[in-house]
Image (cartoon, rainbow, N blue to C red; front, side):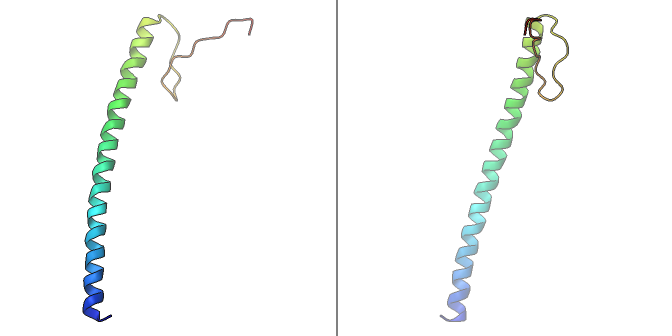
Length: 74
């Protein structure tokens, strides 16, 4: 295999890698948008649940969810 053939093969592979990188970047961007939308939806749902459930104390700092206290007999 000559140097010119090897160079052409490398250029073909590089072009394929560039296309793959662009596609993966596009997918990561779309996934991040979806994660952001789901995060906003979860925040809104937690707020609605807090308003609908009355006074349930403070939300869990890690999850943002309100935890219901167990009855005394548990």
